[in-house]
Amino acid sequence: MARSPRLFIPGGIYHVYCRVARSERVFEDSAEARQFIDTVSDVKRLHIFTILAFCLMSTHYHLVIQTGEIPLWRTMARIQCRVARGFNKRHRFMGRLWQSRYKARLVCTQQYLEQLLAYVHLNPVAAGLVTDPSDFPWCDHDALLGRKAPHLCDVGASLRGFGESPAVARNAYLLRIRAVAEERWMRAGVRDLPWWSEVTNDELFAEAGDHAGAEDYSGRSVDSEPLEDTNLVQIAEHVCFGTSFTVLDLTGQSRSKELSAVRKEFASLAVDHYRHAVREVATFLGKHPGSVSRWIGTTVQPNRKVRLDATRVPGTEL
Image (tube, rainbow, N blue to C red; front, side, top):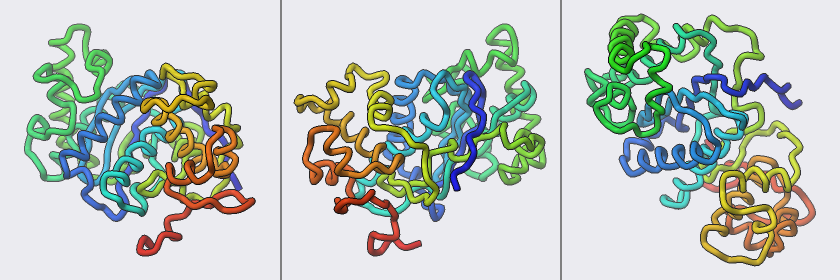
C-alpha cells in the first residue's frame, strides 16, 4: 500500500539527512565531497531553494533547507539520484549508495532553528574529528562567521533570526554554538533531537519525500512501494525546469552534449523513480530501447515494467 501524502509547506524549513549504506566512508574522499557539493549547488540553482546550514560527514550529510515552490521530495530525489549515478559512473560500482530513504523534519520555531544550525555545524566536533568546527572543511560554520566563502549556505538567510546586524547575529550564533556543544542531546541519535522528538504529528515531517525510494549506487529505486502515478510529460517538464531546454527539445533530434545529459537524467528518473518501462521511455524520446537501457544501466524486459533491484546484480546482495 502506498504511503499517504504528507504536508509540503512552500517556504518551510527542513532538517534533511541521509546515511551512506553500510557506513562506507564515501565522502572521506575529498573528490567525492566536492562532487556532492557541486551537485547540490547545481540543483539549488535549478530548483531555487535556500540552504541555511550544511555539513558533509564521511558517511552522511546534513542539510537545512528552506524550500521554494518545488516540493522537497523532488529536490532530494534529484540530488540523490545525481550523486548516486555519478559515483557509479566514476567507480564502475553497482549496489546501494544510500542506506535508506532520506529523512526530513519540518522545523517550527526559531529556537529549534538556532539549535539545528549549531547542531549541524558541530557534527564533526561531536564525532571527535576536530575540536572546532572551523577546522572541518565540509561545513559552512566559518562562512556564517564571515571568514570564508560558503560552500552552499545563503549566509544572510542563515543569520537573519540571530540579530539585526551581521556583527550581532554572528555573536549570537557563536553563543548558540557554545550552548549546544554542552547539550546532552548533541551526541544523541537524530530522533532524540528536540525538533524531532517534540513534534509527533505525522503531517509535519516528510520521510523519503513521500515518493522517492531508496536508491542503489546508480540511483535506481529499490523500494517495493508503488510511487506516484506521474506521466512522462510531467517528468520531462520537471527535468527541463531551470534549463534552456523544453520538452520538445528533449524529444527532438539534437545530439548536443548538454541536451544528451538532460535526456539521460529524464530516463533515469522516469524508470528508476517512477517505474515507467524502458520501452515506453524510448518511444517517448524517439530512441532505441537499447540506448535508453545503456543510459541507466539496466536490461530491457519484454512487455513488462522494469523492476529495479540491487539484489539482481551478482555480488551486491546485502
